[in-house]
Picture 1: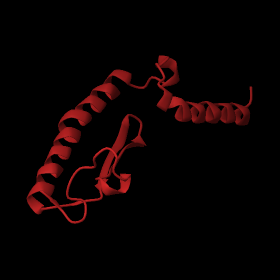
Picture 2 (picture 1 turned 90 degrees about the horizontal axis):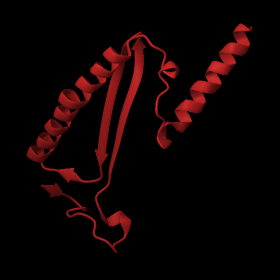
Picture 3 (picture 1 turned 45 degrees about the vertical axis):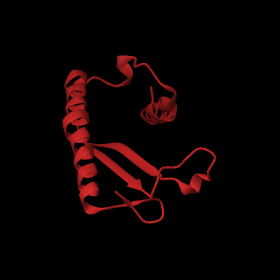
Picture 4 (picture 1 turned 60 degrees about the vertical axis):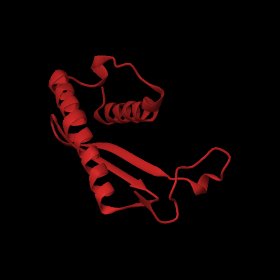
Length: 115
């Protein structure tokens, strides 16, 4: 299945560079009220034979189109047009940066609009 320099998984004790590496991105960008684009992207530092590559690509498409997409669509239906902040969401550590940005933007808008 694997081709090229990295032909086996990394093993503990070996240099990190000797193993396989994969990066992934999941990103949503607003399109309009109630709609967004969902982007997913993945990389790896190994080559695969064409059959294996096609198999993995299909697995990824299935996960995003048949698992993530229906969940995100249902989430949007449930949220409707409610403001995110009004829902009093539970925040996870990874939410901190986006939450600070939203709060700062809201404060700037209030300052600009005035009392």
